[in-house]
Length: 319
Image 1 (tube, rainbow, N blue to C red):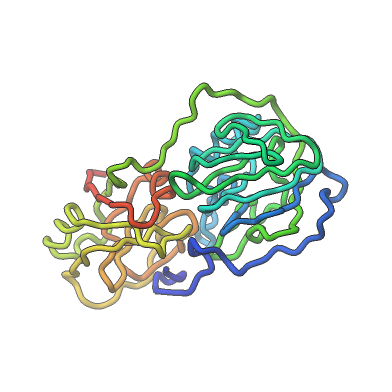
Image 2: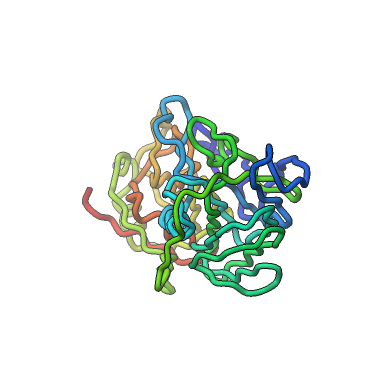
């Protein structure tokens, strides 16, 4: 992926997981408050809320839940406001033991949900007894599920957010076995939904509208046609920083290098290999490769759920 200057850099955020670890004792409580103990952390499970906007001038990105509608729905089902922190799982879910009875809700990528081995509802409030193990299983569609607990996860905030930013390292570490996560006090009754929408990419592939610019003039007319008509796919190297693509390369019309400039959520940056990268929540705040267009934020939830190999089609639209 790219570093803060927009050029390739190592990252621990690939779909296969991370080497970061949280150290905590298996107490089941944190400072006397109700808490969760991690039994199975999964490939990559992080704490996420709505992020920390307003700090890009300090080099700090927003971060936050990749599939924001799924995060907000899980909170609503659990009786929380939208900004409460949830767990964002990747591919194979996670399992936690509750120290006290708590209402939970799982949304995002559909997956099996069990309490002490007994199947319970996905996409609905579920009461988990004290001492029980909540197991969120492998996604059967999409990549990322969201687990909300009544009262939210009360880990210490950093710059006003509890989100883990995998690029900057801000926020709580990704989950590790034995870690203890405190819970806040419930603040409202759980909601009920007759049907939980699944907003993942359609069977035909991921369709992303793109507003051209600001550096589309750095590419040949043929490259812009390739962007609109090319057979791209989601690359396995995609992560919370960006959705990488495989497929035809976009040819530059301009040689040389750009001075580093600001990067926004949804920016479609084109590195030297010519394959577009769509920046997601943990993207760098600056970059030195040209941005051929920007995907509107409302369209990025589906990108967060696109599994490797998913066909991708970019559709140019007017800003």
